[in-house]
Image 1: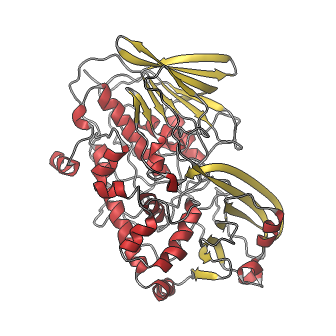
Image 2: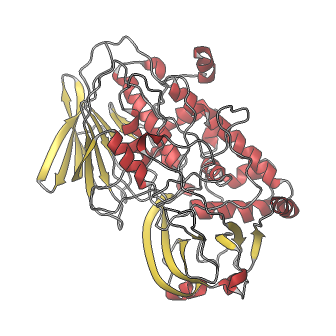
Image 3: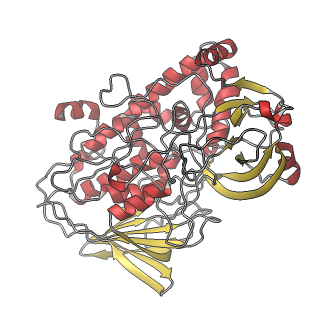
Length: 569
């Protein structure tokens, strides 16, 4: 028997306040016309292609400070990429078409509400890998009733991650265009002076890194590349239809027990072990992690490696903003957006199989629907989810984890360059300022941001001109702090949210399978929180649900996958 027809996809989402309150139910209906359900999602991790890649490569990154993406808005949620990713992965195969590799992206709220976009408009997105072998093959399977799939997405707000490296453009099928990059230099500020400054000359940047830190930057790059090369294996596994029922099994298949240990030890400890100096960790590594995760060098090594990988290359940003990824995917899947608020999920049974009833409230009153499969992509924590699970044994409870508070202040005004040691504002050269982990510093990073649509004639504002700056901090800035950073300002827009997991509280990893056909996506945030990690987790859940439905257990939690994949090739 062929793969089942997908009769409907329902996605339930809660946009994070204060951008757009409320919960939305997204229903996409399409029918399968081909005998094979092709899972079609493959993304490149946020770093350079491995050596020897023939189809695409990225230039070696300069030995400069990590740049920041341009975004005039706050940075919101990793969980958002999951629903769009699974939606794209469930598209039916079409004759005469190659597999398309769709980028992960947050899904937009209903019409009339401000879209929640991860990283804000113009942030970098993970880049697609070149097409590989077909991801699905026809299998002889016992006939089963066609499942009705529910993707449950309660969207929290997540901040942005460092930009992905340059490479091939995302697919044109959803109309994406690359936003032109506007050059800008970066520096690291200690609270009293700049400990490291980027210049226009590559050799001078390289010399400064060597003079201050020896070969620590080379050891860092080798360590990150080693981690990323192993992480790249997931795309080969998923291209051959393999899935994992737990995060531990997924990590073990990529890097063995070493990858699991990287979720339990700090990035500082791992880097010091490979010969990176303490000074480099305190100055550069701490600045990158404060800018991306808003946390110290105590974050787990795996999350730190993903963050550092994204900080090494130039970005691929979407012209018009990341929201176009969402609208493009919804259009591609012919989705119909219906606003509602989910209140609970209850378990029932039908002919010996689990059946899930989803209760929700909308403008037309209360309602509920039954589904064979449910994918929950919101973080299941007391402060993040507002619905209940009923009739489950053992009960499904929220996980006792904490999230890192974060504040984004978008300020239109004149920078006080004197605070940074430049009495003459015309001489201030930096568009992005990172900070070391100094107790007296009240902000994590700030950058001069650009619009999501950049014309050929666009230029950055001169330092003495009024510009739009984004300031990242852990607490809202008071008037005195704003006066410290800006000589004067026209407006300030502040957004507060619980952004990333508080990684120093990580003890164990959440499960992927909550019940027979009830799956949890956002647990991967406790490994590393980024759009790409959610995209990987989304395809894993799609493959896992598919393989479990057809009892294709040989495609789940297999050992020695590298050997098996080479054999299949």
